[in-house]
Length: 136
Image (cartoon, rainbow, N blue to C red; front, side, top):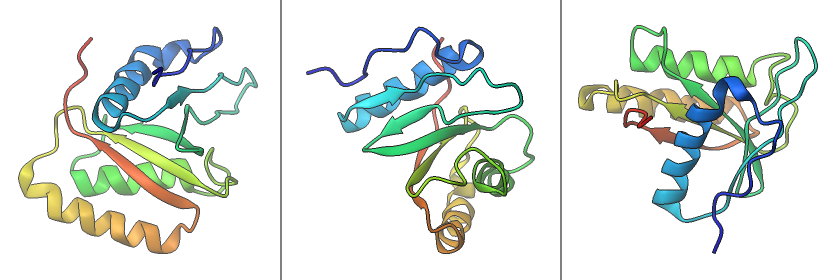
């Protein structure tokens, strides 16, 4: 059974290793098909990185946020805000990659922030939280 579909030759080269790591983590945990999408070459236009469970999604990576709640807030805004890459899809998901920075004490705050985000973003069907560091 093939779970991680073929990677397109024009996948986003800048994010390929991170996208592969994220996809492998999801497939390893949930045993469902996961697709890395073709990269759009339109200047100034980003396209979603993934298709999973017939839903279009993208990954947010914790680089600059000073705390976990702010990371979730920034990720939602960056992916679902006005004019952003997941905004016009009927069904979408966001993969939050914490890069090993999530602390157990932050979990309640993260869940509260996500609960509120589902209420105001009707197209957001689910999120995937990856808490381990990238294994490159």
